[in-house]
Image (cartoon, rainbow, N blue to C red; front, side, top):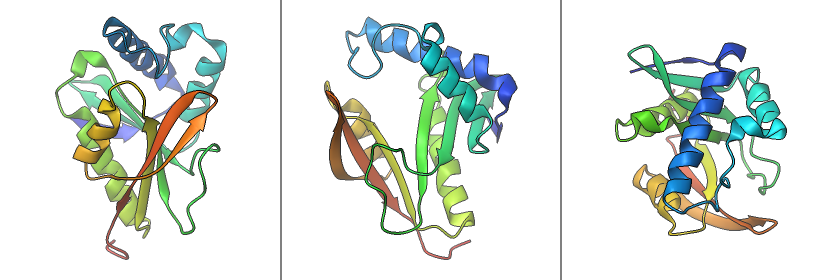
Amino acid sequence: MIIRDGSIDDAPAVLGMFDSAVAWLSAQGRTGQWGSEPFSAIPARVERVTSWTTSGGMRIAEIDGEPAGCLVLGPAMEYVTPAPEPELYVRVLVIDQRFHGRGVGSVLLERARAEAVEQGVSLLRVDCYAGDDGRLVKYYESQGFTRTETFKVEEWPGQILEMRLPAGAA
């Protein structure tokens, strides 16, 4: 598995990752996170994914030359309380479900930790969907994150999680 910077050319692959995740969640009856309509069919979501490709924070994990997962790093999302200290925020983590179970998410989150340390930042945060059975929150906890605060965007329940990193470990 390699990780490389993303570019505008990755927009179709990243949309495909989201579409595969939506289909996978929908097949399990878990539509609360992203609904049941493919990301690629919703213009606002296509625009958002395209904007991430030029943000400078997109990383693409590839397996055998194929895009398998996407990580976008940057400032905190606009709907969460800003941290009282410098931080790096995991804005997006999505995996193409064809590569489910191959450690893609773990490798991308390790990359996020490494980039935070390289930047001299000791706080890494992420937010995620906190509804249904809470499996996504538990996933981030299994990756070393700790729950902090909950929030809602309209009726969508979210959880902020954080990870403390060694200060100045770069």
